[in-house]
Image (cartoon, rainbow, N blue to C red; front, side, top):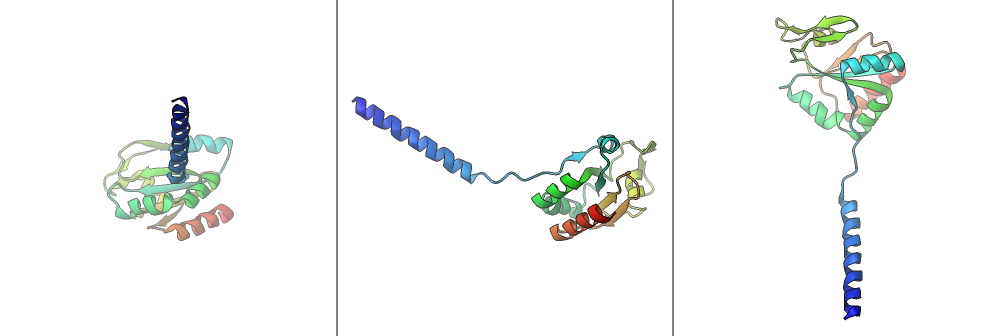
Length: 164
């Protein structure tokens, strides 16, 4: 009887271990996510360690904005590159919040149907999504409107990281 219990114990330990290893293999690899910062956090980090800034300016009901987020910005290589070379910010152009940027208050522009900061960063173009790139002093916004696939986004990020 003792041998039977020992055999059952050994078999169940083996099966439990094999199932745990199988489950571990089945889990998808962890994707890097972009470390989005608030505007205030990015400005504070710039004081300690200047870096270029990537800002995604989007609207809630914009199909291309959602597609950029899902297909391009969630791509592991894009996220990893942004995290290592840029501070990343998201700005909702539909927002009615008052934001402070470089000592100035920005709010909603009803006549433009957008947020004043989005209006300024995109150089008065009401076209979304907009990827806006800034230099290490958080100046000289360079907006690029429209959807970019992974290849286009990688090329643009590398160009800005190396040349802007």
